Image: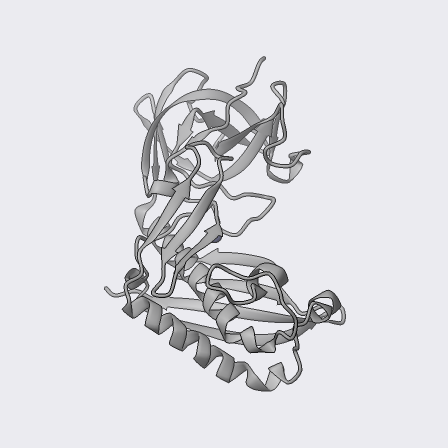
Length: 291
Ligand SMILES: [Zn+2]
């Protein structure tokens, strides 16, 4: 068997829900069947940076509609198919193709060469897109709110504030209409010039400051788009938001709404915890879109 050496074409970055595709290969995968197509509209979860969860949806083949149980990034060296955490190389490694694997029940009548239609659930996609856009906007508002705590020059974000989000982020999880971001306030961050003193007593004020910036940006109706260097899974994509002061740009493989106005009101909440002696700041972001 020879597996495809071209990365899957992905149409979800432009907001597509439906794709017409051809099955390239199928493989047994932990009690399910992995179906790889040449093109897909289904957003897969990425094991290396699992921020946005997989779409739910269906695969239609030979007159049958099959529920997609999960969708994951996969990779092949042309011989074997590796899924998710089992991928042994970094994304973009030469000689490897990076694919979207749709996981379906093993009795699904899908075989190599079949023409299929894929359709992502519109309601879940919409609420994940709201959540992901809110996540990026909140991260920029957080950078602005924390700018005064830096005593040394740090890498800057697109708006000229020290990039606290980019430097301290430990994990980001997108959910429906919101997100949870965890930031490690470790020694190297403090050595880089970030002062965390007294933060625990200022979490309410920090949230109010972030909320006020977000309200201003939402009121401005800042346009959001995805810039992409190509239409394949591994082609570099960026979230671009035309904020009042400047266009912000963040590398991103997820899905988004077209304007911050679609978020409605956005509120954040903070918690300061401790993981093995390292303080961890958690920001929970929640959007309340207009009906
Ligand atoms: Zn993103």
